[in-house]
Amino acid sequence: QLQLVESGGGLAQPGGSLRLSCAASGHSFSSSAMGWFRQAPGKEREFVATIIFSGGNQYYADSVKGRFTISRDNDKKMVYLQMNSLKPEDTAIYYCAADSSGLGYRRPRDYDYWGPGTQVTVSS
Image (tube, rainbow, N blue to C red; front, top):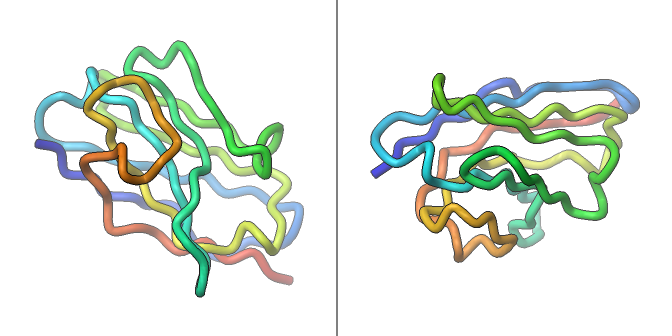
């Protein structure tokens, strides 16, 4: 079982940057794919990015490709989401999640463990 806790959210101006972190505790982190999802008010939770268990492949939603970068440190049991060129439409609660299959799917239902989320607000 994994416990996940996100940090690093806050207020950023359009065009600015934020770096989200996700700290994992428990077993099977290094064999799990890790993903970031987000949910804006009144909208469904949506896929942002995922990284497979080894860190060798990353996948992104079209809306963030070229602006966001996902990475992981298996020794520290950490996952990161570097967010650059932020837009107001990036405003949402951001969730870190773990996929025990290790393969990194895009559907929330494929993820077994979730953090409580961290708020990101992009506004001038």
